[in-house]
Length: 166
Image 1 (cartoon, rainbow, N blue to C red):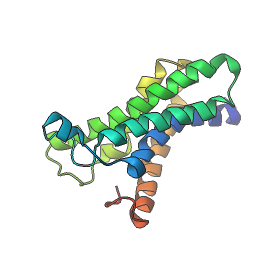
Image 2: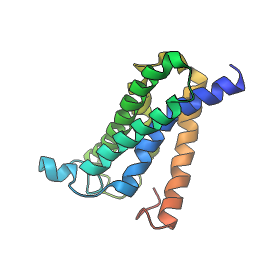
Image 3: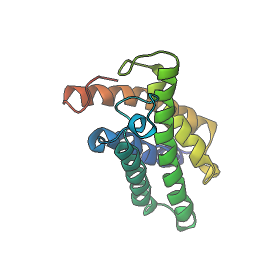
Image 4: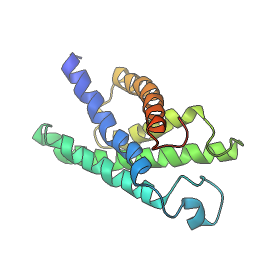
């Protein structure tokens, strides 16, 4: 695989999920899933508005990137983006649920916080463009995401967007 193919595959895999995962920090708030379900499953930071804004912005990110892709995969990539964004948001919710179920307090650090959103996004996206997946790119996505998530959360905390640096 040449460097350009690797870089494009990497970008295609992460762009919608990264956008989906980042935007709820800025646009979230309002009714939580716990309020809606009348259960304590996900915590006070998992809101309906954050979840939906993540799916919408991740999908919009895929539309923007689609303009630079070959015509024959554009429609598939938009579907990829929608489902990858949904996967990212569900992966984030799953991480919060797991934290609650194993007794980790809300707002406390959990190693799956950095990786579960992208893992589920990759699984959902695979249904639409499996040809861009290969083991090298997927491993790179997981490793880079782990460290980028930590770095960007520290930055978000330092500038006051997040209460905790994870």
